[in-house]
Amino acid sequence: MRLAKYLKPYWWLAILAPLTMIGEVIIDLFQPRLMASIIDNGVLGGDMALIITTGVKMLLLVAAGGLCGILSGAFSISAAQSFANDLRQDLYKKVMSFSFEQTDKFTIGSLITRLTNDVTAVSDFISSMLRMFVRAPVFFIGGIVMMLSLNTRFALVMIVSMPIQLLVVILVFKKVRPLFKVMQEKLDRVNSKMREDITGARIIKSLVRENQEIDRFRAANEDLLKVSYTVGRTFAFFGPSLMIIMNLSVVAILMIGGLEVEARNMQVGEVMAAISYISQILMSVMMLTMTFMSITRASVSAGRILEVLDTVPSIKDGGHADNDPIESIRFENVTFSYPNSSGVPAVKNVNLEIRGGEKIAILGATGSGKSSLVQLIPRFYDATEGKISINGRDVREYNLENLRDKIGFVLQSSNIFGGTVMENILYGNAEHTREEGMEAASIAQAAEYIEEFNEGYDTPISEKGTSLSGGQKQRIAIARALVKKPPILIFDDSTSALDFKTEAKLRAELNKHMEGATVITIAQRIASVLSADRIIVLENGEIVADGPHAELMKTSAVYKDIYDSQIREDAAL
Image (cartoon, rainbow, N blue to C red):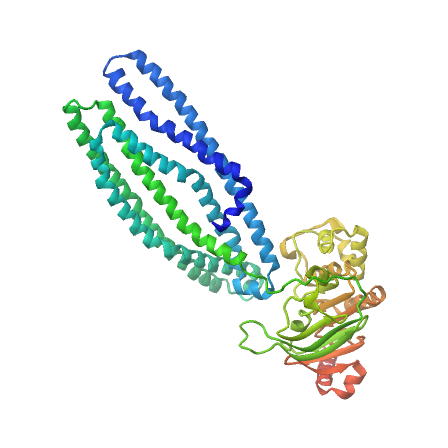
Protein backbone atom coordinates (compact mmCIF):
# COMPACT_ATOMS: atom_id res chain seq x y z
CA MET A 1 0.00 0.00 0.00
CA ARG A 2 2.90 2.37 0.72
CA LEU A 3 4.09 1.90 -2.84
CA ALA A 4 0.62 2.66 -4.23
CA LYS A 5 1.58 6.33 -4.54
CA TYR A 6 3.68 5.37 -7.58
CA LEU A 7 0.47 4.21 -9.29
CA LYS A 8 -1.42 7.43 -8.52
CA PRO A 9 -0.20 9.38 -11.60
CA TYR A 10 -1.61 6.59 -13.77
CA TRP A 11 -4.97 6.34 -11.99
CA TRP A 12 -6.91 6.50 -15.26
CA LEU A 13 -5.08 3.42 -16.56
CA ALA A 14 -5.64 1.71 -13.21
CA ILE A 15 -9.39 2.37 -13.56
CA LEU A 16 -9.77 1.50 -17.25
CA ALA A 17 -7.96 -1.85 -16.85
CA PRO A 18 -10.51 -3.38 -14.40
CA LEU A 19 -13.49 -1.73 -16.15
CA THR A 20 -12.63 -3.29 -19.50
CA MET A 21 -11.93 -6.58 -17.70
CA ILE A 22 -15.46 -6.47 -16.20
CA GLY A 23 -16.78 -6.07 -19.73
CA GLU A 24 -14.89 -9.17 -20.89
CA VAL A 25 -16.06 -11.26 -17.91
CA ILE A 26 -19.73 -10.29 -18.28
CA ILE A 27 -19.61 -11.29 -21.94
CA ASP A 28 -17.97 -14.62 -21.00
CA LEU A 29 -20.68 -15.26 -18.39
CA PHE A 30 -23.43 -14.99 -21.03
CA GLN A 31 -21.75 -17.39 -23.48
CA PRO A 32 -22.80 -20.65 -21.72
CA ARG A 33 -26.43 -19.43 -21.67
CA LEU A 34 -26.34 -18.80 -25.40
CA MET A 35 -24.71 -22.18 -25.98
CA ALA A 36 -27.47 -23.82 -23.92
CA SER A 37 -30.06 -22.10 -26.11
CA ILE A 38 -28.37 -23.41 -29.28
CA ILE A 39 -28.33 -26.99 -27.92
CA ASP A 40 -31.81 -27.05 -26.42
CA ASN A 41 -33.74 -24.90 -28.88
CA GLY A 42 -31.61 -25.03 -31.98
CA VAL A 43 -30.08 -28.53 -32.22
CA LEU A 44 -32.67 -30.52 -30.28
CA GLY A 45 -35.52 -28.27 -31.48
CA GLY A 46 -34.38 -28.35 -35.09
CA ASP A 47 -34.39 -24.55 -35.43
CA MET A 48 -31.55 -23.73 -37.85
CA ALA A 49 -32.39 -20.00 -37.91
CA LEU A 50 -31.93 -19.81 -34.12
CA ILE A 51 -28.60 -21.62 -34.40
CA ILE A 52 -27.36 -19.11 -36.99
CA THR A 53 -28.61 -15.98 -35.25
CA THR A 54 -27.39 -17.10 -31.82
CA GLY A 55 -24.07 -18.20 -33.31
CA VAL A 56 -23.59 -14.80 -34.95
CA LYS A 57 -24.50 -13.16 -31.65
CA MET A 58 -21.88 -15.32 -29.87
CA LEU A 59 -19.24 -14.41 -32.44
CA LEU A 60 -19.94 -10.68 -32.01
CA LEU A 61 -19.80 -11.06 -28.24
CA VAL A 62 -16.51 -12.98 -28.52
CA ALA A 63 -15.08 -10.15 -30.62
CA ALA A 64 -16.29 -7.54 -28.13
CA GLY A 65 -14.94 -9.60 -25.21
CA GLY A 66 -11.62 -10.06 -26.96
CA LEU A 67 -11.35 -6.31 -27.53
CA CYS A 68 -12.11 -5.67 -23.87
CA GLY A 69 -9.47 -8.23 -22.88
CA ILE A 70 -6.84 -6.67 -25.15
CA LEU A 71 -7.59 -3.19 -23.84
CA SER A 72 -7.50 -4.42 -20.24
CA GLY A 73 -4.12 -6.03 -20.82
CA ALA A 74 -2.77 -2.91 -22.51
CA PHE A 75 -4.03 -0.61 -19.73
CA SER A 76 -2.76 -2.82 -16.90
CA ILE A 77 0.67 -3.36 -18.46
CA SER A 78 1.06 0.37 -19.19
CA ALA A 79 0.14 1.26 -15.61
CA ALA A 80 2.43 -1.43 -14.14
CA GLN A 81 5.41 -0.53 -16.32
CA SER A 82 5.01 3.18 -15.60
CA PHE A 83 4.78 2.33 -11.90
CA ALA A 84 7.98 0.27 -12.17
CA ASN A 85 9.79 3.02 -14.07
CA ASP A 86 9.04 5.67 -11.43
CA LEU A 87 9.79 3.32 -8.54
CA ARG A 88 13.09 2.20 -10.06
CA GLN A 89 14.03 5.83 -10.66
CA ASP A 90 13.42 6.74 -7.01
CA LEU A 91 15.28 3.65 -5.83
CA TYR A 92 18.28 4.54 -7.95
CA LYS A 93 18.17 8.12 -6.69
CA LYS A 94 18.10 6.87 -3.10
CA VAL A 95 21.00 4.47 -3.70
CA MET A 96 23.01 7.34 -5.18
CA SER A 97 22.44 9.27 -1.93
CA PHE A 98 23.88 6.46 0.20
CA SER A 99 27.28 6.75 1.75
CA PHE A 100 29.90 4.12 0.96
CA GLU A 101 29.11 2.64 4.38
CA GLN A 102 25.45 2.10 3.50
CA THR A 103 26.24 0.68 0.07
CA ASP A 104 28.60 -1.80 1.73
CA LYS A 105 25.91 -2.71 4.24
CA PHE A 106 23.34 -3.66 1.60
CA THR A 107 26.00 -5.08 -0.78
CA ILE A 108 26.00 -4.15 -4.44
CA GLY A 109 24.56 -7.51 -5.51
CA SER A 110 21.56 -7.07 -3.22
CA LEU A 111 20.94 -3.52 -4.43
CA ILE A 112 21.01 -4.71 -8.05
CA THR A 113 18.47 -7.44 -7.22
CA ARG A 114 16.20 -4.93 -5.50
CA LEU A 115 16.30 -2.50 -8.43
CA THR A 116 15.63 -5.24 -10.98
CA ASN A 117 14.09 -8.50 -9.77
CA ASP A 118 12.15 -7.07 -6.81
CA VAL A 119 10.74 -4.13 -8.78
CA THR A 120 9.73 -6.56 -11.54
CA ALA A 121 7.95 -8.80 -9.00
CA VAL A 122 5.93 -5.87 -7.64
CA SER A 123 5.23 -4.58 -11.16
CA ASP A 124 3.98 -8.02 -12.26
CA PHE A 125 1.71 -8.10 -9.24
CA ILE A 126 0.29 -4.66 -10.10
CA SER A 127 -0.43 -5.82 -13.64
CA SER A 128 -2.07 -9.00 -12.35
CA MET A 129 -4.02 -7.19 -9.64
CA LEU A 130 -5.61 -4.72 -12.03
CA ARG A 131 -7.02 -7.62 -14.03
CA MET A 132 -7.26 -10.78 -11.92
CA PHE A 133 -8.54 -9.03 -8.80
CA VAL A 134 -11.52 -8.04 -10.93
CA ARG A 135 -11.78 -11.03 -13.24
CA ALA A 136 -11.73 -13.69 -10.51
CA PRO A 137 -14.34 -12.19 -8.11
CA VAL A 138 -16.72 -11.25 -10.96
CA PHE A 139 -16.38 -14.74 -12.44
CA PHE A 140 -16.87 -16.27 -8.99
CA ILE A 141 -19.98 -14.29 -8.04
CA GLY A 142 -21.43 -14.14 -11.55
CA GLY A 143 -20.84 -17.85 -12.09
CA ILE A 144 -22.62 -18.76 -8.85
CA VAL A 145 -25.60 -16.55 -9.71
CA MET A 146 -25.86 -17.92 -13.25
CA MET A 147 -25.46 -21.55 -12.14
CA LEU A 148 -27.99 -21.32 -9.30
CA SER A 149 -30.43 -19.67 -11.72
CA LEU A 150 -30.31 -22.93 -13.65
CA ASN A 151 -30.84 -25.21 -10.63
CA THR A 152 -30.41 -24.57 -6.90
CA ARG A 153 -29.27 -28.16 -6.29
CA PHE A 154 -25.93 -27.30 -7.87
CA ALA A 155 -25.19 -25.39 -4.66
CA LEU A 156 -24.43 -28.79 -3.07
CA VAL A 157 -21.43 -29.17 -5.36
CA MET A 158 -20.01 -25.82 -4.25
CA ILE A 159 -20.70 -26.51 -0.57
CA VAL A 160 -18.54 -29.63 -0.81
CA SER A 161 -15.84 -28.51 -3.26
CA MET A 162 -15.14 -24.98 -2.05
CA PRO A 163 -13.93 -25.87 1.50
CA ILE A 164 -11.62 -28.55 0.10
CA GLN A 165 -10.21 -26.10 -2.43
CA LEU A 166 -9.70 -23.44 0.26
CA LEU A 167 -7.91 -25.99 2.49
CA VAL A 168 -5.47 -26.77 -0.32
CA VAL A 169 -4.90 -23.06 -0.86
CA ILE A 170 -4.19 -22.41 2.83
CA LEU A 171 -1.72 -25.30 3.05
CA VAL A 172 0.20 -24.16 -0.02
CA PHE A 173 0.13 -20.51 1.05
CA LYS A 174 1.52 -21.40 4.48
CA LYS A 175 4.29 -23.46 2.90
CA VAL A 176 5.59 -21.04 0.24
CA ARG A 177 5.27 -17.68 1.98
CA PRO A 178 8.51 -17.87 4.02
CA LEU A 179 10.35 -19.40 1.07
CA PHE A 180 9.98 -16.31 -1.12
CA LYS A 181 12.15 -14.19 1.20
CA VAL A 182 14.79 -16.92 1.36
CA MET A 183 14.71 -17.20 -2.43
CA GLN A 184 15.35 -13.46 -2.88
CA GLU A 185 18.27 -13.60 -0.41
CA LYS A 186 19.79 -16.53 -2.33
CA LEU A 187 19.34 -14.56 -5.54
CA ASP A 188 21.21 -11.65 -3.91
CA ARG A 189 24.12 -13.99 -3.25
CA VAL A 190 24.16 -15.27 -6.84
CA ASN A 191 24.13 -11.72 -8.22
CA SER A 192 26.90 -10.61 -5.84
CA LYS A 193 29.05 -13.58 -6.77
CA MET A 194 28.47 -13.07 -10.50
CA ARG A 195 29.30 -9.36 -10.29
CA GLU A 196 32.44 -10.04 -8.24
CA ASP A 197 33.73 -12.64 -10.69
CA ILE A 198 32.96 -10.64 -13.84
CA THR A 199 34.68 -7.57 -12.37
CA GLY A 200 37.69 -9.60 -11.28
CA ALA A 201 37.84 -11.83 -14.37
CA ARG A 202 41.40 -10.80 -15.26
CA ILE A 203 42.71 -11.68 -11.82
CA ILE A 204 40.84 -14.98 -11.81
CA LYS A 205 42.29 -15.94 -15.18
CA SER A 206 45.80 -14.76 -14.35
CA LEU A 207 45.82 -16.91 -11.20
CA VAL A 208 44.12 -19.82 -12.99
CA ARG A 209 41.25 -19.86 -10.47
CA GLU A 210 38.42 -20.40 -12.96
CA ASN A 211 37.51 -23.87 -11.68
CA GLN A 212 37.52 -22.77 -8.05
CA GLU A 213 35.30 -19.77 -8.78
CA ILE A 214 32.99 -21.94 -10.89
CA ASP A 215 32.65 -24.25 -7.86
CA ARG A 216 31.89 -21.31 -5.58
CA PHE A 217 29.29 -19.98 -8.01
CA ARG A 218 27.82 -23.48 -8.33
CA ALA A 219 27.41 -23.63 -4.54
CA ALA A 220 25.57 -20.28 -4.47
CA ASN A 221 23.49 -21.26 -7.50
CA GLU A 222 22.56 -24.63 -6.02
CA ASP A 223 21.41 -22.94 -2.81
CA LEU A 224 19.03 -20.88 -4.96
CA LEU A 225 18.04 -24.01 -6.88
CA LYS A 226 17.12 -25.90 -3.68
CA VAL A 227 14.75 -23.16 -2.54
CA SER A 228 13.33 -22.81 -6.07
CA TYR A 229 12.78 -26.58 -6.20
CA THR A 230 10.87 -26.48 -2.93
CA VAL A 231 8.63 -23.70 -4.23
CA GLY A 232 8.24 -25.48 -7.56
CA ARG A 233 7.32 -28.82 -5.91
CA THR A 234 4.70 -27.06 -3.80
CA PHE A 235 3.14 -25.43 -6.85
CA ALA A 236 3.38 -28.75 -8.71
CA PHE A 237 1.12 -30.21 -6.01
CA PHE A 238 -1.14 -27.16 -5.97
CA GLY A 239 -2.23 -27.03 -9.63
CA PRO A 240 -3.17 -30.70 -10.11
CA SER A 241 -4.96 -30.76 -6.73
CA LEU A 242 -7.24 -27.94 -7.79
CA MET A 243 -7.80 -29.57 -11.19
CA ILE A 244 -8.83 -32.82 -9.50
CA ILE A 245 -11.32 -30.92 -7.35
CA MET A 246 -12.64 -29.13 -10.43
CA ASN A 247 -13.02 -32.34 -12.45
CA LEU A 248 -14.78 -34.09 -9.58
CA SER A 249 -17.11 -31.10 -9.36
CA VAL A 250 -17.86 -31.47 -13.08
CA VAL A 251 -18.68 -35.15 -12.50
CA ALA A 252 -21.01 -34.15 -9.67
CA ILE A 253 -22.71 -31.57 -11.91
CA LEU A 254 -23.21 -34.23 -14.58
CA MET A 255 -24.73 -36.64 -12.05
CA ILE A 256 -27.08 -34.02 -10.60
CA GLY A 257 -27.84 -32.60 -14.03
CA GLY A 258 -28.50 -36.07 -15.43
CA LEU A 259 -31.03 -36.79 -12.71
CA GLU A 260 -32.68 -33.41 -13.32
CA VAL A 261 -32.86 -34.00 -17.08
CA GLU A 262 -34.33 -37.44 -16.47
CA ALA A 263 -36.94 -35.84 -14.18
CA ARG A 264 -37.55 -33.24 -16.93
CA ASN A 265 -36.61 -30.38 -14.56
CA MET A 266 -33.73 -29.31 -16.83
CA GLN A 267 -32.59 -29.55 -20.38
CA VAL A 268 -29.30 -30.94 -21.70
CA GLY A 269 -28.02 -27.52 -22.77
CA GLU A 270 -28.60 -26.15 -19.28
CA VAL A 271 -26.49 -28.97 -17.81
CA MET A 272 -23.71 -28.10 -20.25
CA ALA A 273 -24.03 -24.45 -19.20
CA ALA A 274 -23.82 -25.50 -15.53
CA ILE A 275 -20.58 -27.39 -16.27
CA SER A 276 -19.13 -24.23 -17.83
CA TYR A 277 -20.19 -22.17 -14.84
CA ILE A 278 -18.74 -24.54 -12.23
CA SER A 279 -15.49 -24.56 -14.23
CA GLN A 280 -15.50 -20.76 -14.26
CA ILE A 281 -16.21 -20.61 -10.51
CA LEU A 282 -13.42 -23.01 -9.57
CA MET A 283 -11.01 -21.47 -12.06
CA SER A 284 -11.74 -18.07 -10.51
CA VAL A 285 -10.78 -19.49 -7.12
CA MET A 286 -7.57 -20.80 -8.66
CA MET A 287 -6.89 -17.38 -10.19
CA LEU A 288 -7.52 -15.68 -6.87
CA THR A 289 -5.18 -18.13 -5.20
CA MET A 290 -2.43 -17.49 -7.72
CA THR A 291 -2.97 -13.77 -7.22
CA PHE A 292 -2.63 -14.19 -3.46
CA MET A 293 0.55 -16.15 -4.07
CA SER A 294 1.85 -13.25 -6.12
CA ILE A 295 0.87 -10.96 -3.24
CA THR A 296 3.10 -13.02 -0.98
CA ARG A 297 6.05 -12.78 -3.30
CA ALA A 298 5.37 -9.13 -4.10
CA SER A 299 5.07 -8.29 -0.39
CA VAL A 300 8.51 -9.77 0.21
CA SER A 301 9.92 -7.77 -2.68
CA ALA A 302 8.05 -4.64 -1.57
CA GLY A 303 9.53 -5.02 1.91
CA ARG A 304 13.03 -5.19 0.45
CA ILE A 305 12.32 -2.15 -1.73
CA LEU A 306 10.95 -0.17 1.22
CA GLU A 307 14.02 -1.11 3.24
CA VAL A 308 16.06 0.85 0.70
CA LEU A 309 13.58 3.72 0.40
CA ASP A 310 13.26 4.03 4.19
CA THR A 311 17.00 4.12 4.76
CA VAL A 312 18.00 7.62 5.76
CA PRO A 313 21.30 8.61 4.11
CA SER A 314 23.94 8.71 6.83
CA ILE A 315 25.66 11.60 5.04
CA LYS A 316 23.17 14.41 5.59
CA ASP A 317 23.20 17.46 3.36
CA GLY A 318 24.06 20.80 4.92
CA GLY A 319 22.60 24.09 3.81
CA HIS A 320 25.68 26.22 3.28
CA ALA A 321 27.05 26.95 -0.18
CA ASP A 322 29.74 29.36 -1.33
CA ASN A 323 32.37 29.90 -3.99
CA ASP A 324 34.94 31.50 -1.69
CA PRO A 325 38.65 30.88 -2.35
CA ILE A 326 40.13 28.09 -0.24
CA GLU A 327 42.01 29.58 2.70
CA SER A 328 42.45 26.44 4.79
CA ILE A 329 41.46 22.83 5.30
CA ARG A 330 41.69 21.82 8.94
CA PHE A 331 41.50 18.48 10.74
CA GLU A 332 40.81 18.84 14.46
CA ASN A 333 41.19 15.73 16.64
CA VAL A 334 39.81 13.60 13.79
CA THR A 335 39.28 9.90 14.40
CA PHE A 336 37.55 7.58 11.96
CA SER A 337 36.61 3.90 12.12
CA TYR A 338 35.03 1.87 9.34
CA PRO A 339 31.79 0.06 10.18
CA ASN A 340 32.36 -3.55 11.27
CA SER A 341 36.04 -2.79 11.85
CA SER A 342 35.94 -4.16 15.42
CA GLY A 343 36.51 -0.66 16.71
CA VAL A 344 40.03 -0.33 15.27
CA PRO A 345 40.28 3.23 13.91
CA ALA A 346 41.71 3.81 10.44
CA VAL A 347 42.52 7.40 11.41
CA LYS A 348 43.45 8.36 14.98
CA ASN A 349 43.39 11.80 16.55
CA VAL A 350 44.68 13.67 13.48
CA ASN A 351 45.33 17.39 13.80
CA LEU A 352 46.38 18.99 10.54
CA GLU A 353 46.01 22.32 8.78
CA ILE A 354 46.46 22.67 5.02
CA ARG A 355 46.71 26.24 3.80
CA GLY A 356 45.04 27.37 0.59
CA GLY A 357 47.27 26.86 -2.46
CA GLU A 358 49.58 24.50 -0.57
CA LYS A 359 50.92 21.33 -2.20
CA ILE A 360 50.68 18.52 0.34
CA ALA A 361 51.90 14.95 -0.03
CA ILE A 362 50.87 12.03 2.19
CA LEU A 363 53.11 9.01 2.58
CA GLY A 364 52.80 5.87 4.64
CA ALA A 365 52.74 2.11 4.52
CA THR A 366 49.76 0.20 3.14
CA GLY A 367 46.92 0.41 5.66
CA SER A 368 48.32 3.48 7.39
CA GLY A 369 45.10 5.46 6.75
CA LYS A 370 46.13 7.69 3.83
CA SER A 371 43.04 7.11 1.65
CA SER A 372 40.76 7.04 4.68
CA LEU A 373 41.99 10.48 5.71
CA VAL A 374 41.41 12.25 2.38
CA GLN A 375 38.01 10.58 1.81
CA LEU A 376 36.74 12.46 4.85
CA ILE A 377 37.16 15.83 3.07
CA PRO A 378 34.43 15.33 0.39
CA ARG A 379 32.45 13.35 2.98
CA PHE A 380 32.58 9.96 1.34
CA TYR A 381 32.56 9.04 5.03
CA ASP A 382 32.03 11.22 8.09
CA ALA A 383 34.57 11.41 10.89
CA THR A 384 33.70 9.29 13.91
CA GLU A 385 35.15 11.94 16.20
CA GLY A 386 36.48 15.45 15.72
CA LYS A 387 35.85 17.95 12.95
CA ILE A 388 37.05 18.74 9.43
CA SER A 389 36.55 22.31 8.25
CA ILE A 390 37.10 24.30 5.07
CA ASN A 391 37.66 28.02 5.62
CA GLY A 392 36.69 27.48 9.25
CA ARG A 393 33.30 25.92 8.44
CA ASP A 394 32.56 22.28 9.29
CA VAL A 395 32.25 20.27 6.07
CA ARG A 396 29.02 18.79 7.48
CA GLU A 397 27.44 22.22 7.18
CA TYR A 398 28.09 22.43 3.44
CA ASN A 399 25.64 21.53 0.75
CA LEU A 400 27.06 18.22 -0.56
CA GLU A 401 26.95 19.26 -4.21
CA ASN A 402 28.68 22.55 -3.42
CA LEU A 403 31.29 20.84 -1.25
CA ARG A 404 32.16 18.16 -3.80
CA ASP A 405 32.13 20.67 -6.62
CA LYS A 406 35.11 22.33 -4.93
CA ILE A 407 37.08 19.10 -5.09
CA GLY A 408 38.65 17.22 -7.97
CA PHE A 409 39.15 13.68 -6.65
CA VAL A 410 41.10 11.03 -8.54
CA LEU A 411 40.64 7.67 -6.82
CA GLN A 412 43.03 4.75 -6.67
CA SER A 413 40.87 2.79 -9.11
CA SER A 414 40.29 4.73 -12.32
CA ASN A 415 36.63 4.15 -13.10
CA ILE A 416 36.01 4.66 -16.80
CA PHE A 417 32.46 4.63 -18.14
CA GLY A 418 31.10 3.39 -21.44
CA GLY A 419 31.10 6.18 -24.03
CA THR A 420 33.72 8.15 -25.90
CA VAL A 421 37.02 9.44 -24.56
CA MET A 422 35.70 13.03 -24.56
CA GLU A 423 32.48 12.02 -22.79
CA ASN A 424 34.59 10.50 -20.01
CA ILE A 425 36.77 13.60 -19.70
CA LEU A 426 33.74 15.92 -19.56
CA TYR A 427 31.82 13.55 -17.29
CA GLY A 428 32.01 15.89 -14.29
CA ASN A 429 30.25 18.68 -16.16
CA ALA A 430 28.88 18.35 -19.67
CA GLU A 431 28.75 22.16 -19.94
CA HIS A 432 32.51 22.30 -20.32
CA THR A 433 33.63 22.72 -23.90
CA ARG A 434 35.51 20.25 -26.03
CA GLU A 435 38.47 22.64 -26.03
CA GLU A 436 38.55 22.57 -22.22
CA GLY A 437 38.50 18.78 -22.32
CA MET A 438 41.43 18.72 -24.75
CA GLU A 439 43.35 21.16 -22.57
CA ALA A 440 42.77 18.97 -19.49
CA ALA A 441 43.91 15.90 -21.45
CA SER A 442 47.08 17.75 -22.47
CA ILE A 443 47.89 18.64 -18.86
CA ALA A 444 47.21 15.03 -17.81
CA GLN A 445 49.64 13.78 -20.51
CA ALA A 446 46.80 11.94 -22.23
CA ALA A 447 46.55 13.98 -25.44
CA GLU A 448 49.40 12.22 -27.21
CA TYR A 449 47.98 8.70 -27.03
CA ILE A 450 44.36 9.85 -27.49
CA GLU A 451 45.23 11.56 -30.78
CA GLU A 452 46.74 8.29 -32.02
CA PHE A 453 43.36 6.56 -31.75
CA ASN A 454 41.50 6.15 -35.05
CA GLU A 455 38.70 8.45 -33.93
CA GLY A 456 40.72 10.55 -31.50
CA TYR A 457 38.62 12.01 -28.70
CA ASP A 458 35.51 10.45 -30.24
CA THR A 459 36.89 6.94 -29.86
CA PRO A 460 34.38 4.69 -28.03
CA ILE A 461 35.63 3.15 -24.80
CA SER A 462 34.43 -0.31 -23.77
CA GLU A 463 32.78 -0.89 -20.40
CA LYS A 464 35.11 -0.16 -17.47
CA GLY A 465 37.77 0.95 -19.96
CA THR A 466 38.98 -2.58 -20.66
CA SER A 467 40.37 -1.41 -24.01
CA LEU A 468 42.78 0.96 -22.21
CA SER A 469 45.94 0.31 -20.25
CA GLY A 470 46.16 1.17 -16.55
CA GLY A 471 48.22 4.29 -17.26
CA GLN A 472 45.84 5.45 -19.97
CA LYS A 473 42.84 5.07 -17.66
CA GLN A 474 44.62 6.98 -14.90
CA ARG A 475 45.40 9.89 -17.20
CA ILE A 476 41.78 10.11 -18.43
CA ALA A 477 40.64 10.06 -14.79
CA ILE A 478 43.10 12.87 -13.99
CA ALA A 479 41.89 14.88 -16.99
CA ARG A 480 38.31 14.37 -15.79
CA ALA A 481 39.22 15.96 -12.45
CA LEU A 482 41.28 18.77 -14.01
CA VAL A 483 38.58 19.92 -16.43
CA LYS A 484 36.53 21.10 -13.44
CA LYS A 485 39.36 23.47 -12.47
CA PRO A 486 38.56 22.78 -8.81
CA PRO A 487 40.19 24.77 -6.01
CA ILE A 488 41.07 21.49 -4.24
CA LEU A 489 42.70 18.56 -6.05
CA ILE A 490 43.15 15.16 -4.39
CA PHE A 491 45.24 12.47 -6.06
CA ASP A 492 44.81 9.17 -4.23
CA ASP A 493 47.80 7.22 -5.54
CA SER A 494 46.45 8.00 -9.00
CA THR A 495 49.79 8.05 -10.84
CA SER A 496 50.97 4.60 -9.76
CA ALA A 497 50.67 3.22 -13.32
CA LEU A 498 52.68 6.05 -14.88
CA ASP A 499 56.37 5.85 -15.61
CA PHE A 500 58.71 8.37 -13.94
CA LYS A 501 59.12 10.48 -17.06
CA THR A 502 55.36 10.83 -17.71
CA GLU A 503 54.68 11.53 -14.05
CA ALA A 504 57.38 14.24 -13.98
CA LYS A 505 55.80 15.92 -17.02
CA LEU A 506 52.39 15.69 -15.35
CA ARG A 507 53.70 17.32 -12.14
CA ALA A 508 55.32 20.11 -14.11
CA GLU A 509 52.10 20.81 -16.04
CA LEU A 510 50.06 20.73 -12.85
CA ASN A 511 52.35 23.27 -11.19
CA LYS A 512 52.08 25.46 -14.28
CA HIS A 513 48.33 25.32 -14.88
CA MET A 514 46.91 24.69 -11.39
CA GLU A 515 48.70 27.50 -9.63
CA GLY A 516 46.72 28.58 -6.58
CA ALA A 517 44.93 25.23 -6.24
CA THR A 518 45.29 23.23 -3.04
CA VAL A 519 46.74 19.86 -4.06
CA ILE A 520 46.82 16.79 -1.83
CA THR A 521 48.75 13.85 -3.24
CA ILE A 522 48.87 10.33 -1.85
CA ALA A 523 51.80 8.44 -3.30
CA GLN A 524 53.91 5.36 -2.72
CA ARG A 525 57.00 6.71 -4.51
CA ILE A 526 59.23 9.25 -2.84
CA ALA A 527 60.05 10.73 -6.24
CA SER A 528 56.38 11.69 -6.63
CA VAL A 529 56.37 13.93 -3.54
CA LEU A 530 59.78 15.57 -3.36
CA SER A 531 58.48 18.84 -4.80
CA ALA A 532 55.61 19.11 -2.31
CA ASP A 533 55.52 22.05 0.09
CA ARG A 534 54.98 19.63 2.95
CA ILE A 535 55.02 15.88 3.33
CA ILE A 536 52.76 14.18 5.88
CA VAL A 537 53.86 10.74 7.07
CA LEU A 538 51.14 8.46 8.48
CA GLU A 539 51.68 5.36 10.56
CA ASN A 540 48.78 3.31 11.95
CA GLY A 541 46.40 6.18 11.25
CA GLU A 542 48.45 8.79 13.10
CA ILE A 543 50.66 11.62 11.84
CA VAL A 544 54.23 10.83 12.80
CA ALA A 545 55.97 13.47 10.67
CA ASP A 546 55.08 16.73 8.94
CA GLY A 547 57.38 19.00 6.97
CA PRO A 548 59.28 19.51 3.70
CA HIS A 549 61.60 16.81 2.38
CA ALA A 550 64.84 18.37 3.59
CA GLU A 551 63.50 18.84 7.10
CA LEU A 552 62.05 15.34 7.36
CA MET A 553 65.33 13.81 6.26
CA LYS A 554 66.81 15.33 9.43
CA THR A 555 63.94 14.92 11.90
CA SER A 556 61.94 11.82 10.91
CA ALA A 557 63.45 8.35 11.12
CA VAL A 558 60.32 6.85 9.55
CA TYR A 559 60.54 9.13 6.51
CA LYS A 560 64.28 8.59 6.17
CA ASP A 561 63.77 4.82 6.22
CA ILE A 562 61.18 5.09 3.44
CA TYR A 563 63.46 7.34 1.41
CA ASP A 564 66.56 5.18 1.89
CA SER A 565 64.74 1.94 1.06
CA GLN A 566 63.33 3.36 -2.20
CA ILE A 567 66.61 4.94 -3.23
CA ARG A 568 68.35 1.59 -2.69
CA GLU A 569 65.65 -0.16 -4.75
CA ASP A 570 66.01 2.37 -7.56
CA ALA A 571 69.80 1.99 -7.48
CA ALA A 572 69.47 -1.80 -7.63
CA LEU A 573 67.25 -1.46 -10.69
